[in-house]
Length: 311
Image (cartoon, rainbow, N blue to C red; front, top):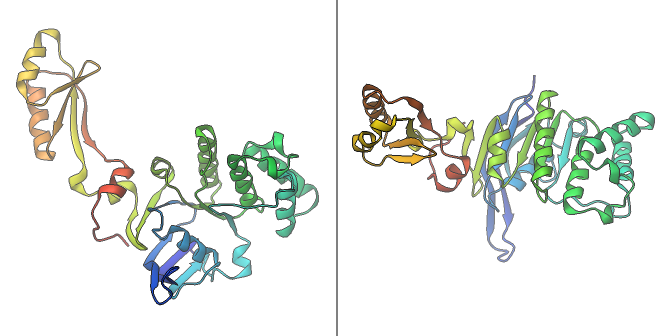
């Protein structure tokens, strides 16, 4: 079975907006592929090349070099486009249409008619949480509501691959939670999802694998645990102490902290962790929790130096 998305050595160059004799390399030698039924989170600073890569995958613009395949075919193939649902970063719709009219419009463009279209539109409006506003004109929708109707139109034709550029932009915490549940449900239905987001905790919680791009170059691609350098893992021990042993606990090691009546000690590395854990157990202190603590994705993106990336 063909992979939903496959990029091989893709590069894209634009003319500089202010210096017509100069060029901007938006994407440089980008290679990655995703599996069927996988959620891939796309991370990068503003201007890193995320949206450019998404536009090339969609067939809106073409790379200067390299190869892109979507379900084994060129992105511009009309049959391929029928299998993709797309939510752009800044969706724009005809403001005089209602939510229901918009879905009917996009549904008919996709060849869906009659009772099937009506049933699917109503289900999607309920799914994204704006069914009660289905007969309201889009000119009266908030930014969050427009984002929701944009997600609904991306799903109207029941695509196998869903591509979303900042799908949680403009949503309040409840809306973000609902969209995350929709993304998870798409995976349960066997669909493949790739989405970009500036909210790194959402990327971390939702994604099977994470693609980090910086200045157009792939920095990392893999699971969160795969992209974390071993020296970034912090080790910590939490233990309890009977009242008569509390003073001795502070004398056991330097740097012991007490949080919510738990004794916590941070370790320099794995060897230090093993040494301190053995001493705590030997002294008879009940160990509550012990092990490695992974840094957050935010720490990885903003503090990790460029290293050799995974293919």
